[in-house]
Length: 122
Image (cartoon, rainbow, N blue to C red; front, side, top):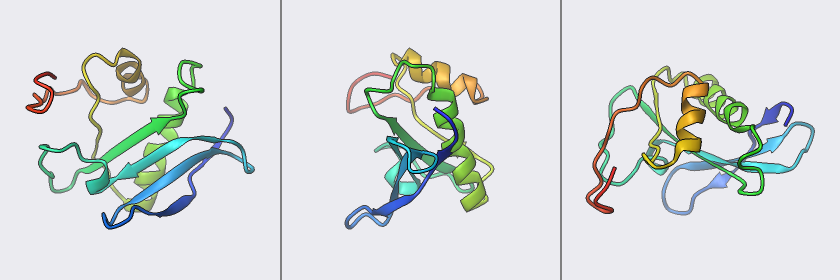
């Protein structure tokens, strides 16, 4: 996948948060997106002072090729560098083993569980 760059692609209409495109270096292809703050926070999950919520999504055509850890690490490095945040939080559904492996590969501590009243599951 090579090195990544994270250019802003504009504000989400009416929500106050930025979604960023994740692209390969040197005008490489679009690899996915990321967002932070309110945009990334799962409904029903309370904001925690000093913690930045982060959301990511990879182009489905690129999922499963072994680049998730590099993709996730680039996103986290971007938010640490641009916001100064040292505590980051992401929500991964318990059935999503691929994403759980990625979070472990980038050094995330053991995840906590959250029960969803919307889906009736974790």
